[in-house]
Length: 114
Picture 1 (cartoon, helix red, strand yellow):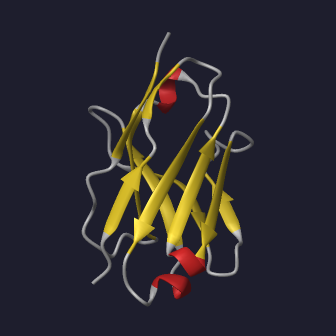
Picture 2: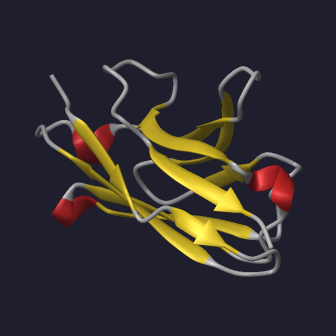
Picture 3: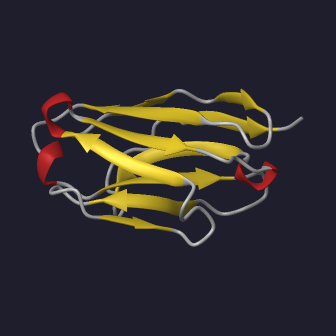
């Protein structure tokens, strides 16, 4: 079973940046498509970005050009660099495989507000 721990969230002003990290346990990490998801209050969880084992990426239209997903298979880690943040990016961010096969972690709160 893969365990997931997200970190790096916080309060940031509009236009600011944050870098999220996800640490995963388990030897199968390197073969998985990994994704970053988010859930805003009162909304369903949505996929923000994903990355294949060899580094191919996909992004939701709402974050394209602002967010960058990356991974380090040697460290069993996946990252999300978020730039030009907007208030609508406020949510709890989670990582998981795509589709989400594993137990969801606690997530990390991102709040974009002035």
